Length: 336
View 1: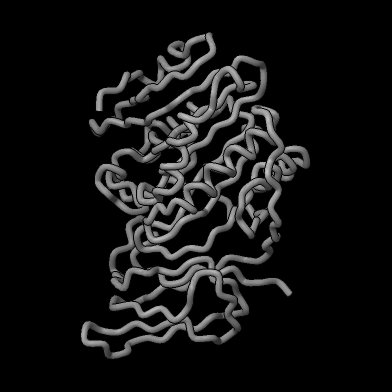
View 2 (view 1 turned 120 degrees about the vertical axis):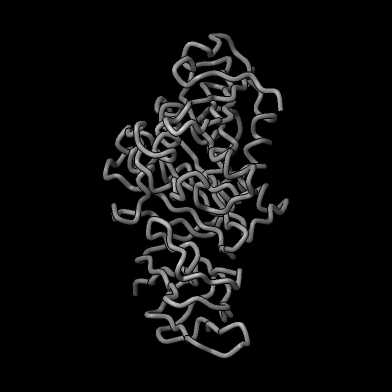
């Protein structure tokens, strides 16, 4: 792929002042010698307005958002746009090209929980610092996610809430146009990824959208991401049109994670979107021969956000204590 490259230090001076589309491969060299490469498209509109960023591919196997972001680049017309649209279709390009799931292949970190501002740290530190430098002038940001190749995930939209009424209102407005049933405002800072917290502190209203499962980018899921982007642009008066307002429900509850402390073969007994009662059977773990070695039940009445659909469970592989390889079921404890 022959793309025009620009170092992050030169990016702000490389953008044209005129209307139109520009596409750069933004680069930055880590002290380890590894090169960061981030594709960035910028559409400068013919009329004044705010700046919105749409990004995807933070976790490289979450493909529906990546394909929707590509479609957005080719669909938005500069002569009809008010303001500036930044699109980053693939954040973790190195992981994407290696077909790597969830964790950064260079340092095995989960980049969503990496706080920008430490470019002298690990590769993931520099990657997320670079992303922040690209998006820091945005007013709004939509971050697309999905279930990767081992996650059977229901669609929902977590909305980081920072306590500023006006910014929280705008964040909820970003979510309102997605054809996704559940919206989850998050007030507990411990439940909000570090990158999202940094966006809130910078005054950037933001959401992340979970839509798609098992690493399969269906046309339906791609369309949900794309149509939601369009609705958000319409909501913020950046393009003409009346934004969609599908029926949505607000989720309230506390997240909990069912993990295995043993390695084995996972047999789930639930589906994404199920409501399970306290003590309900979630699944079992067997040895290679099918002999049950552990049973798992729900700790409370909960909504199944996603479960690991891949049967391979490796409890001994926990880089940075992350539970990707021994996770079983992710739940939202429902408030009565």
